[in-house]
View 1 (cartoon, one colour):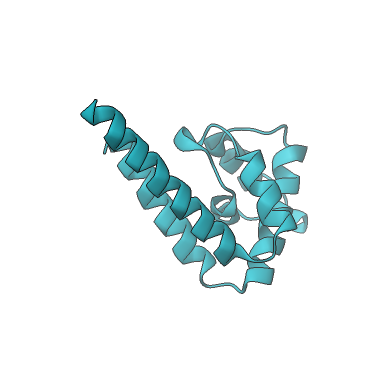
View 2: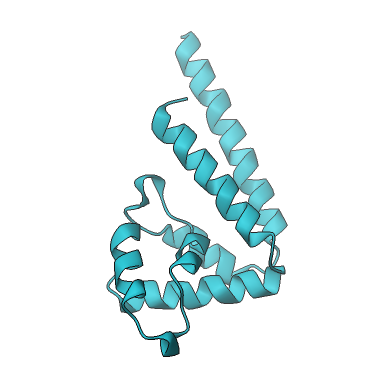
Length: 117
């Protein structure tokens, strides 16, 4: 794995661990609220969103830590809209996680096959 892939995998594990402190319903509510702010702020990258949220008043009901709940694409330059839509519309996160793990395994198998050619 590349350094970037290892970092992204580690950050996903951290994000999942943080989410495990919440029920599925609570996590989805927080994600949805964060996603609304992501759109309101002009869809910034993660670092810019952290700076912008840090300057918001407490009445906005969002914290810098909650930004990690969003599904950021590799490099944290954008939020994965397709995954976010699935998270908002699908209450069963375990099915989504299982599907993502299956897709990752399939991609890894395809990469291994292409490397052997």
